[in-house]
Picture 1: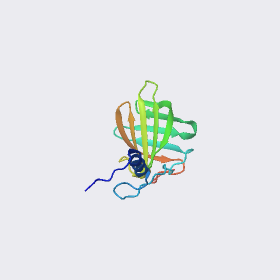
Picture 2: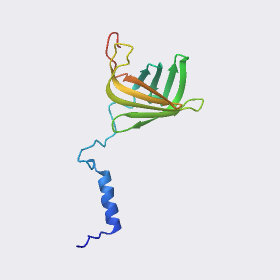
Picture 3: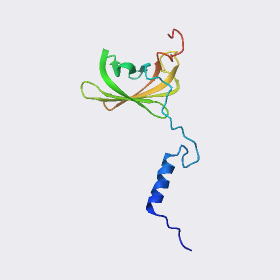
Picture 4: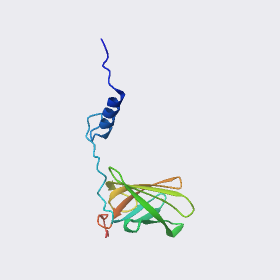
Length: 148
């Protein structure tokens, strides 16, 4: 019995096509379009508890403001947006050099401190510190008593 021989370039081309397929090797179809659930002009409000923190991401200005109880006025910094398959990512750097990475994904979220329900979950890494929270936008608000 002889093994079939294929030129190395043909094998490489087939591998590349398989990698570009919208269907994984496990037969499950995967969405390859960037996340579009939050418009590029929307302002995103993010907050978390334990520890308390908040961030306002103004995409139209390419800027964010990060605040904590120790720094109520917050610190403003430039951000860059990345739309993945199931959410958004934002990166930036605080004045002191601490890197900031924020990820917003769709999914009901509760902060544990209020009666609000948020349409997005959020995670942030700020200077090596992992934070969890919830998010809403100016067009996709939170729900609950007194929600605006």
